[in-house]
Length: 281
Image 1 (cartoon, rainbow, N blue to C red):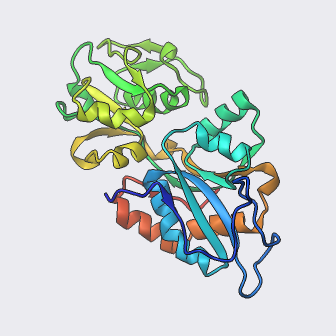
Image 2 (spheres, one colour):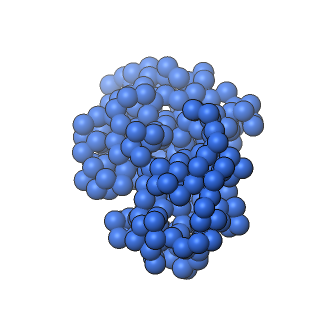
C-alpha cells in the first residue's frame, strides 16, 4: 500500500484560503463560472480516506472544484477543525462516533453522505481463528467506546461471549454477561492509531484494528485477519459538514463523485475487499 503524503493539493488555481487559514472560498457559492473554480478543503484520515479523495481530485477539477486534502492522524482534531471553520468537510468517521462526538461536544454537524465501509478486524500472529484463542487471552483493542460496540459483537457471533444489550444499544465491556474463556478485553486499550504498531510488536494474543489503521500500518489483512465485522452491521464512513453547509453545491458534488462508479471501481481495485464502497446515504 503506497504511503500517502501528509497534505494532498491539486494544482494551484485562482482561489486561495483566507489569511486566517480558514476554508472560505473566494468565489460565490454555486456552480463556478467559466474559468473559475471553488475550493473545498477536506480533513481526512490518511488511508484509505485521503487516497480515495486523491482519486477524486481530477473528477472534481472537471466540475470546477479545487479539492484540497488535509490529513489527520487522530480522530479528535478533524471535528475540532471542522467546527472552527479551518476545513469545510471531514471524512473519517462512522455514525456511532459522530453521534458520540455531537453529544459530548455539542457540534452542529450532519452527514452529507456515506462513502465506504471498513470492517473492523481481529488480527493475530499466532492463532488462525477466534476458536483457537487460549483461556485468558489478551485482546488489545481501541480505547474508543464507540469501537467497543462494533468489536464485542464479533466475539459474540463466534460464541465466545454473550452480551446483555438491547437491540441497537451500544455494547460495552460491562455488558459482557458470559465469558467462559475469560478473555481479557479491558486490560489493554490503546489509541486506535497505535493498534497496528501493537500488533507488529507481537503484543497480546489478538489485536482488534480499525481497517484504515491496519492498511496505513502495513498489516497484511488477508494473512493475519482471523475475524471481521459482519457485513450486515457495518457502519459507513461519512462525509460530515457543518449543518449550514449540508446543501452547499460543492459538498453535494463531492458526495456525488465519491459515490460514482469510477470511485467505486478505484476502491475495489485498490483495497481488494478490505474497504467496501457504498452508494447510499
